[in-house]
Length: 364
Image (cartoon, one colour):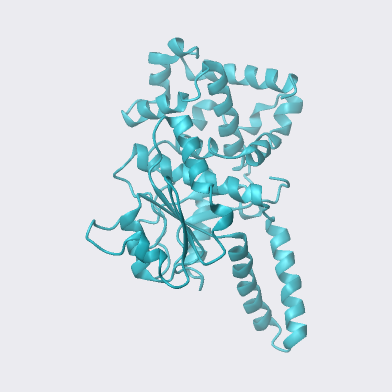
């Protein structure tokens, strides 16, 4: 991220739409041959969108799948990346049947078009006197102001956020195969409100699966938010490990508000449940760390664990223990010494702090 305004929080909120049955229906070839659809297929999945929209996403699924396998040692489930709105309920239903993971995704052009529709409606309601060129001028200015206020995405940032979301879904389908990992609505109407954040795993683990897949642009931004720690060794900017490893996601409540607003929106149908917040969407806490620091803490914790153990798949071991019902404390007690880690949460936190200070002093 290049500024503090750009998308800070991404959340794959589950909308409660279960995968469809295995009854015979449309094939991916049937879907891709329909007027208005264009597809790019690869070993890892299929990108589906309108003509001309798919080219810049040609490697998105493959790169995210390769990163997931690198960090978790599992082949990523096959994914469909659905660009823009899909109003055809039959197509949506069959995509859910065909792919273990289906991610609806707004392109940068889609996002601008949605903002423009919203702005135009607001301007026409508040200034019915504006017509033709005068109306278009005000709409154009208002669209630019809105995009600037919420933070623009460049291609690198956009694709980093996309990889983050695929990480959430790959993790859920790989470690909790009975859970729904699809965010595309099968039926018509607005998306249902989510009941939980991500998978049944602790929220930090669910977030870790996504942060690990982020690109260099997002990784740099995560560390960029830890200025107080870098300059003053002030670790009150993040949560104690005892809290971090057990807490719910700090931005879930705000994400639910966005989802509720989306339910009331004319743009609700055909999209799905990915929620992206920026800092202005999240009320600052009266005390304690800002919600966005959950991501920064996760990124730094990931690097600490990988560097300390020398094992790029260390979180695959943690995830396996969690799915077996173990807590991190129990896992450390059993495996910490063997892996070169402390055997308690308190000692792990102290080790992390020492590592972080040394990292900053070395200029990394």
